Image (cartoon, rainbow, N blue to C red; front, side):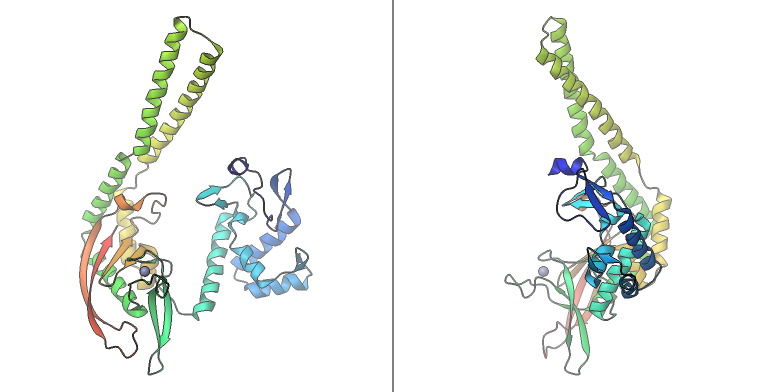
Length: 363
Ligand SMILES: [Zn+2]
């Protein structure tokens, strides 16, 4: 299967609307692709999904022989295959589905579609930490919930998705507004009180360490040296008259590997050199300072890890935070603050209690 995928062949299953399989390859079916393009363009331009569906159905355009259904429509507009991307686990293949829609349009449409779906479910309530909040105890995502107080007021909470499961989690629910206020205040305070120049230097320093700690490069270099040594030894054997078909094959293999390694080493070195500049970092930090609370979170906060008495807030050092890296060694804490608040832990009839949160900001 892996070979099928890396050859760019159709991996099986149902081929997407807009495509056909010809000689094991996925090819664009031009008539259907026109419909796909029209759906994406109209939706990106702000035409509501149900209007687009109605129009298609009025014209008699069918989806696999049936009228377009709402679920079909929404599945289509979030499918990356239309932008040429096929995922298998963590692997991404761009050689299987040819793109029908440009990536820029696809991103606009996907964002709209996801917002729509979300908005419907939550009746317009905006959860600032949607998809960013993780439980510090069990590692599960922290979701949202609501309840109605004795006075009939709707109370919204963030609560661990592991609560109420068999191995119940110890994270206590937190009022939505309270948690959002705590984190927004801490981030704003941190940006105002931190010496941004020094912070930028710290981020640069960290970047250098990552570039230097190039374990991949070391591995490649070691293998390159070993390969070169093996080639030398074989050549010496050839000089002494030991020459068989197998030595010849082995030599060719080694030479090929050596060339391959040279390319890989060059790529790895180039990657390490792609460093961000201090100006870029400062620009990013100053831009964060100017944002409204809601924008600040989406622009500057990458992940929030919640405990009952402390909160770790992971910030983005630049807009395009390296997504493939392993986070653990590339982050450092740059600001810590303690805030005491009155919390109501969503226990019926429970009194409010004082809770001190230690909030740490990481970048
Ligand atoms: Zn949990």
